[in-house]
Structure formats: C-alpha cells, structure tokens
Image (cartoon, rainbow, N blue to C red; front, side, top):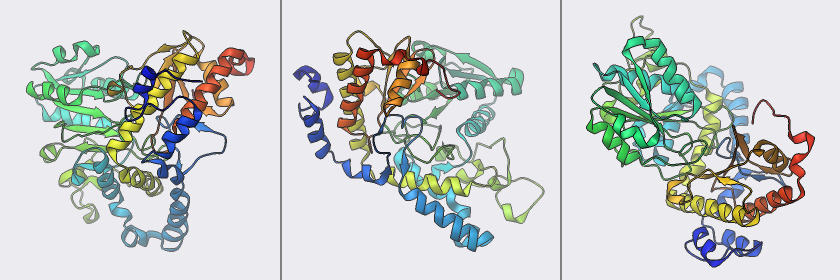
Length: 427
C-alpha cells in the first residue's frame, strides 16, 4: 500500500512521510503523544477505533477502584465522605474537565448523565428567558438531545416550542422568541464541527442562550468554551475522557449565569447546606446548585483517572494528531477501496472531529467482519460505518493496518458471510 505526495501532504503537514507501513511507524516514533499509549490497557491484536463511543481502559483505574473499594469503602466505610474527600469529588473532577474544555474550574461539575444534565439546563434556560419559548436545534442531532427536548416540550406545553432546522437555516431561525439554541458541537454520525463562536454570538445577539453538547468533542478537539463565550454545555465521561461504560457526565454553566439559573431537579446535594437537613430547598451558590442526588463515587473515581490522563496531554498536539490520523484514513480507504464507500464526514480536517464516517449499504456486515478480525469501529443506521481516532492511544500504523484489513475483507467478500448479517442489540 502506498500514497502519492499530494495525499501525503494532507496526512501530516509537518512531513510527507506516510508512504508505507514503515513510514507510519516512523511517524509514531516521532509522535509527542506516543508515551500516553502505555497508560491504557489495550488488548493484544486489537486495533481500537471506537473511542468515540467508549474510551479504552486506563491502567490506573484498576488500582484506583481497588483502593476505593477495599480501603475507602471496605475499611473506612462512611468516614470516607470526609477522610477520602468523596463529598467534593464532583467538583474536583469537574475542575479537571474544565481545563480540557476551556472553562474555569468553578464552572464545571461532574454529575449524573448527559441526558439528565440536558434536562436540567434546558429547563433552567427556559426559565431564565421569560417571555421566550422557542428552542432551536437541528434534525439528526444526537437522539438523546432531541428526545430530552421533546420531553421538555411535552412537559411544559405551550411554554416551550421546538424549532428543528437544517444547519444552513439555524441562524435564520433564531429570533426574538428564541430562548435557547442547543447543538452538538461535533455531530455524532458525520463528525462535522459546528462553529461554536459564530453560532453562540448569533444566538446571544438575539437575546438567547446557547447549550452545547460536547460528548463527541471533549478530549478530541481543542474546545474553548470561554473563548467562544458559551453559556451552557454538557458532555459525557465515557468517550474520549475514558471514564468507563456509563461514566458520570459533566455540565458547564458560565460564571455569569450561575446565580440566575436554578436546576429543576432540586435534590439535596444541590442545597446550600445539605447537612442542615432543612425542609425548605435553597440552591447552593455557584455551580454546586446543579448537583442533584448522591454522587456515584465508584464512577467518579474511575472517571478521574481518565480525565487526569487527558488533562496532562497538550490540547494542540491532540488536535493535530487527530486531524492527521483522520486524513490518513480517508486517503488510504479511497486509495485501497476505490469507489466502494461514500465519505460521510467533511474532507477538510478542520471541519471534522476525531472520527471518520463512510457510508455503505452493507456497512453493518462489513463492520462486523472488521470487528471479527480485531479492527473495532461501530455502525450507525442506516448505512454509516464510524471510525474514531483517540489520539492518546491510536497510532499511524493502526490506521494503516485497519485499512489493509478492510481492503482484504472487501476484496475477498468475507463480509457476505451469514454470521455478519444478523444485527445485535448494540451496533
């Protein structure tokens, strides 16, 4: 397998080197992020290109959870809320995430799930914009975002209206009735990046708030919430932050809005003085008012390990490698499997997150054949094969080998096997 010079220029803007597997290995030796790969427990013989759905296991998680279970929970029992700092874990993890997404340490908290956090912030935003009832979003947004919006609309009746617009019409749809613009920064299926700064400015000029879902961007691209003057954001902890399946999520509220917004889920951990056990609810100051119930200590402890790794990585180096890996993958697929797949992601890496999606009518079966051979991506209906490139542990040679495996599957027709035709519950 080889690449011409023009293709190579798109792969690595620093050096036109990726001509063969040996050249890819040379790029990996010069990779400033190479050492991070050793911090993850990656199975032998597996090329993992699904970190955009579930991040790999940080090696530190095993010992950390072992200590939380055996010592903090097993030996110290309830004392660990104080002695081990369990009670401040949402704030500590939130502050570390803040450093990854361009926010202040007191503007992010780790809690609940992305869906719950969306509900909290959507309803709080509507209440903060009295006289306005319109929420603007796009079709094809991540399903949970759309489902939560539909649920809020149904709950509030004539106090909420959902305006679903194609990306080209989003700005025209924002008017004096708009309370909130809700978008996912990196589209889950195509990887397309929205211009956060421009769209935020447009919404704010009309008097609306913005809510950004960072689930497919935190830890993958160089997010700068405060640089974009964003109002609100949410994100999950189990993709590029490597917090484990079902890891706690996070939410961001810009400091200027924290005194105004109130969570509709007024649980005891969001109370100003939870251990006074007052009957009347009083919201905590600052970001703490967005807490609800008792935090998941095991989940947050695992997430803290993944976030710590990502927080130590240079964000610009992460983004540069992400772009290079995606460019390399696109060029190799189109070279080795010409005319067989439709690129569903932006070709320009500056417009694409840390994933590449290709369309094929039999994409599910092809992906199952790849997984069977140790190349793990995923599939999204109706025809999208997604390949995620987590820059801290995916190498250039992984991309090269993955495309070689894809080429063999396509040339041999192996994907047509009966075992690959039946869809599992999770795709």
